[in-house]
Amino acid sequence: KDVMAAAEKAGKEILLPSDIIIADAFSPDANTKVVAADAIPDGWMGLDNGPDTTKEQKEALSDCKTVIMNGPMGVFEFEKFAKGTFGIVDILADITKDGAVTIIGGGDSVAACEQSGRAGEMSHISTGGGASLELLEGK
Image 1 (cartoon, rainbow, N blue to C red):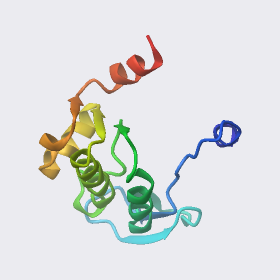
Image 2: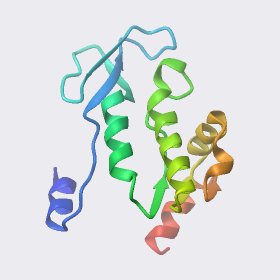
Image 3: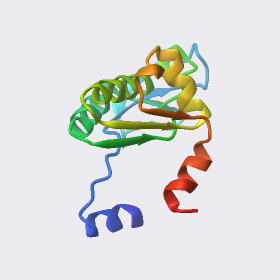
Image 4: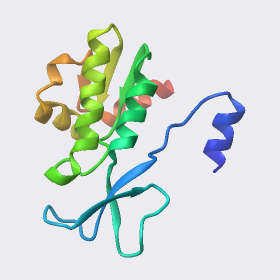
């Protein structure tokens, strides 16, 4: 809540998921549902962004000049929970074609871009996620 309040005070928007793909187990064979982000039932866990969230991300990022990805949206290693991550990778690759600078930092983010087949369409890729964030901090 403090982060959201600070962002609002600074006139910035933090986009949080509106819907989530949930599972009853951390397993590629888990039962799944799409629910509102604030409606995850007891005994279930959120393992990916939902389709509405991906649409909202596409709209929010469509006119950005620079985007930094530092982590996947979901458990992309399991096919049932890969759509959110691959959706954001597709969005980033598409806006790169339109002139945006896209920076992918971190091993999981790089792996997701490579698995999607779109890694070569990004502006910059580095497996050093922590190092990328420290660079942005000015360290």
